[in-house]
Image (tube, rainbow, N blue to C red; front, side, top):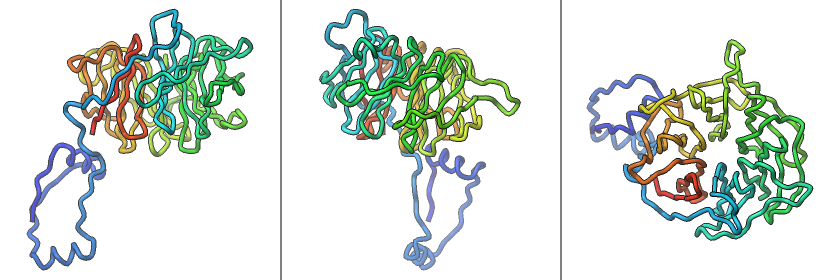
Length: 325
């Protein structure tokens, strides 16, 4: 009995155990059969291999009715029915597209709660949509039909990225206070303030943009200042960082969106380098999923759809969906 490792298997083993040492240990047929019957010999793959050339599932333009400026989709989120919610910062509206890319809804709020400078959105567990608005320094919450419900305020100076964790709590990153805050989605009550400091007590955020969470509720934040990705535990402890400023392999020019899939892969939009970085769960570089040679142009918002596809929005409104595994 024997096996030869591939790149993906080596990565998985190193993530689990550290240094990899392979030895050939002969096993008799009788011993092997007994082990299989007792469930002792199993092969699992933590991280499935990524496609070298992701397959395009669909593309569409995130244009709305009566847009008065070029589309600038800074934020994106996915509903339970796989509808795509985009935030068009420059047209000051939220747009919803069905799974086929057809515009089904757009809203700006009514005069008393109108969106000023929306940046990002997240779909809550009850289907409501929470939107950051850095002109009014609020998080505005709308129902699935686009009707305004309530606002969270008093904690922000310039809210940008927004997401939810496994409990459904709302997490917001603020580039004015350089911290993260966590809220109850029903009451808007502040549950936690994450100062975003390292072990020396120094602020690690400089100009943060977007936020996402992993399966175990670690918090991922993109930052224009190198290192570009900061990773925190759910309790707020600073865990890791990735990226420097530039064009080389582990370098990023203006990171925007970030997301994480169910396997633990982390995806980062490298806006000015026209590429998507893929990181392993420990924050180390894995590969580029998409680059300029794939037709990618200024990637902005990132998301994983409910059916497991990778979605990216581009500057000026192109939305691309890929099968990446």
